[in-house]
Image (cartoon, rainbow, N blue to C red; front, top):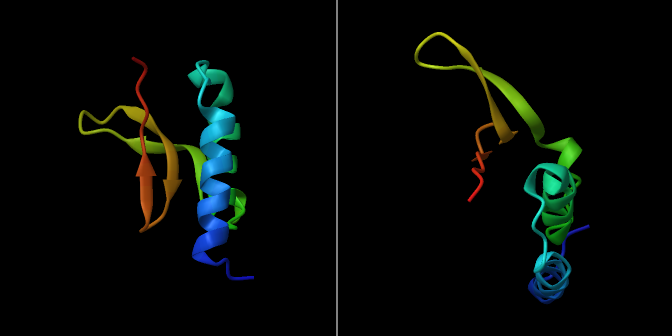
Length: 79
């Protein structure tokens, strides 16, 4: 089902209200992004993965916080 811009705006406002006081990044990251994708009517699990393993420049292993191939890469850092 394709969402209208009005529906996306309504969902975005509800999302921002729900998350405005969030402060525990590590414990809430997956819930945050699942809710974020829902703004657009997308089930995150169908397009993106958490903690995608990557090879770093120094040949060590690392992780990307959220990865949607060819579309989105998110790496969050604490304050």
